[in-house]
Amino acid sequence: MIMVIDVGNLNIALGVYDGYKLISSWKLATNPQLASDEIGTLIYKFFEFDEIDPKKLEQIIISSVVPNIMYSLTHGLRKYFGINPMIVKHGMNTEIKINMDNPKELGANRIVNLTSAYHFYGKSCPVMVIDYSTATTFDVIDEKGVFITGITAPGINICAEALYSRAAQLPKIEIKRPESVYCRNMVECIQAGIYYSHLGGTRYIINRIKKELGARNLKVIATGGMARVIAEKNSIFNVCDPYLSFKGLRLIYEMNYHDAYLWEDE
Amino acid sequence: MLLVIDVGNTNIVMGLYENGILQATWRMSTRDEKTSDETGIAIYSFFKGENKNIKDTTGVIIGSVVPNIMYSLIHGIKKYIGIDPIVVTADMPLGIKILRDNPRECGVDRVVNVIAAKEKYGTPAIVIDYGTANTFDVINEKSEFVTGFITAGIKICADELYKKAAQIPKVELISPETLIAKTTVDSLQAGIVASKIGETIEIINTLKRELNIPDAKVIATGGLANIIDPDCDIFDVYDPVLTLDGLKIIYEEYFKDR
Image (cartoon, rainbow over all chains, first blue to last red; front, side, top):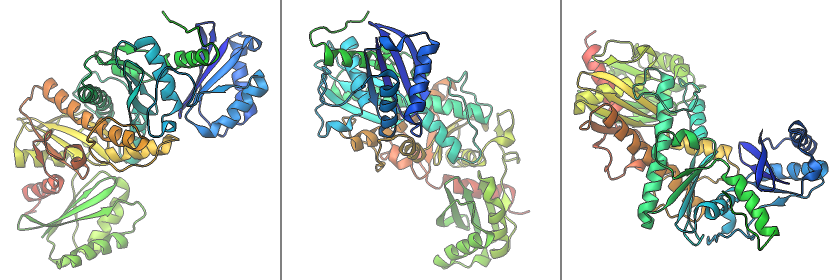
């Protein structure tokens, strides 16, 4: 059994793989103020509740974009699971090639997503991964797994929060696809605005990158919490895969421990 | 002379009109803590800077979306200009019909914008104001304020991203020449602005298609509009003084000879 952990700015997503099957997953809020014991015991309790034996855990692999929480997280895992977790970083085998001036600028979560996308969806065509997270990121690799471009835009929730906190008369809203373009009140005006804004931003960035690269066969894979909201009723993505990062973490673990044997899914 | 005041969440923009012509514009930051005296003396200084006599003002009209500063603003004007300002509200009869459940809760800035667009450019019109929020509003041939969308402005989205994401630096906001980016700075510059360009295009297309107004004129205003469409390929008109003119139009039509 392997535990995969994806630490984002807003949430920590955890998953447990038994062989190649995801048997459990949980989400925690990312709170850098938590101490090792708090995080450790909390995760341990998830195992207890789901009746998974922590002693069967062979390894833990983490990707993180939040340096501040890493001390507590790794120490908590060491103490309560007896495992020194693997941390995704540049230089690991991933099948993709990051040819940037400063490769360290590409966040670990993006390496994980690209590794996953290349393995499961790419190789015969260029692939774009769109991750709807704190930021909405668009990353592209070619058929050979070479990194071409990465775009970072403010995420959907970020924009909604910005509006709520900076504009005096505007309320908090639930993010969803509007039923009609006829907005009869403030909430509907904002819901429609935020929705079409992110649909449009996505569409424009995909199309412009396709054009600049001359890549009409670009495969677009979306992941992240809000991907489904954007995907619904719009044929804008080729694939919507909420488990892309989990699969990527599992893969990177394999690639760095079992050289010859690579996991083929579905 | 007519002083018009557009109070937004980030800035207060003022315009001075003489014989219907805009003579000067001024910007002040919108701050809750400012007292009537601080506000009043600032306005007085603006007048002095343009060699205009503040006492020559015959009317003051305000459109505001920030309730908290109104007390200081109104009292500052009363004290330093000696005039009771007119405060525009969305439920005043202004020649348009607002198609909402509760017209009164519609932001005054948007009402003023669509009135200005109608007078200056005709209907149907899609009015986009790039400010603290980006507002997209539609006025049809029947002078009905049909619908509108509100999204977060370019700058506040960027600011919130810096606040909430650990590894992201602040970048200058300019229209990206390319979306091929291999550094964090390029990635952000491209992403922040491209997402807003895409927002504009999608919303204009959606409104034109769903409301069946393919020939609607697209009028943009607001300080940040230039970042989105510097060459005016997307907008039909860029009018930086749209809101100020709207306030002037409302004053001359409904309040001048009161």
